[in-house]
Image 1: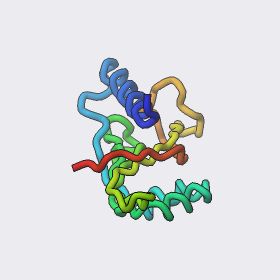
Image 2 (image 1 turned 60 degrees about the vertical axis):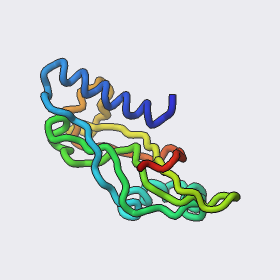
Image 3 (image 1 turned 180 degrees about the vertical axis):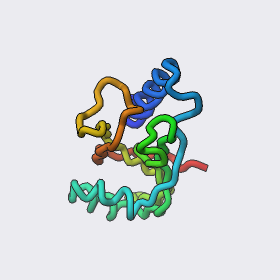
Image 4 (image 1 turned 90 degrees about the vertical axis):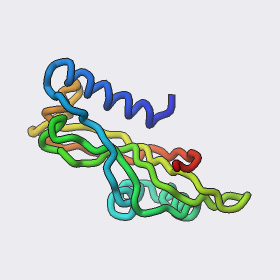
Length: 143
């Protein structure tokens, strides 16, 4: 199973549990726009070799999409975006420039107001999160 689908399945599983417990009644996850330069590049900079590879290999549109956290799912984080993130890009390959969707996968840890990592699925109690760059995927462009 691809990494980003594991991330989405984990997110959807958390939503399903919360819905079943009556903690929320509307969808918790939707797409939200992000900036590659302002939001994603700082995550990638933690791995300079990978940053150079991505910058040298792709021409990336600045506006992309991540998962948007709903206010009812996590009241303190409503509106925040988390990975995976998708951007339209041009891949400078050996066969020439190829339009692709560049997916930036991340690892995410959620924390409560006391700074303790949430590991029991009670994401409604999330006060902050820490996201780190994990990997990339290259897919055909989305129309």
